[in-house]
Length: 316
Image (tube, rainbow, N blue to C red):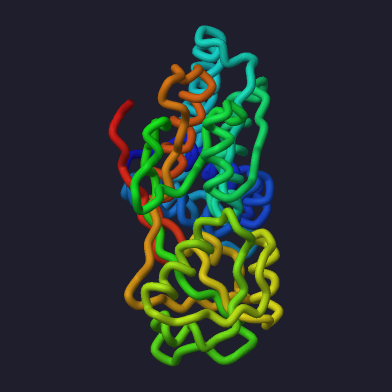
């Protein structure tokens, strides 16, 4: 993977404020994300760009000082190019209605929307957060333009054009304040059935997947709390109310949650979906490019917490 504009922007932020923490705050990203991407940039260029051991904060190495004016010019040229192209393809205005499941909003979409808004500030963004099944219905009714949805085991809806983008594992979340549910770091569905379970409301595919796994194993789960959105489920687990089956994406940035894998494993595929009978607008095409570019950057770095694989979609 070559040098990206995102990596150069992260490098410039560190160079300007001489602090990884303040640079990450100014960009609206987590500090580990910034550090990973800067390290990936140094690896790609074959030289250290920042001396991290300075008493007064990080300072540029000779290689970093040489890159600095080039990076500024490249980002300025890229911004000019985006503006020129946006004026041609009509992205100086417009609207895009995006849907996603709560776990994807937590784990991916917030950063993607930030990047998209920075690139196309005059395009109005509308976000709908719901379970995968309601999102598919909203796409069919024309209430959404695009949505990140879960591909069911039976396959995607024929009325939708889908681009698989992620494959992620479902794992058991438990509070780090309590003893691990298994000393092995893994547990079976039968073992999980003996634990109090927190499950989200109906309409969440992760709920249906978990319940089907219990049925396939011939066991009945013991519910501690049933219903609620993903944020509420995670908070209940952190508080020690019970455990939950959740996508691996949600573990990032939650030190109060412990991840225990299920055996045999449960996986799900995330796809970007739109109606197949409609020609995508320029804004929809731009959103797709932004999403895939963002995922490619993550894949080139340390990737995600847990078992999450970025898929490489074919060109539309």
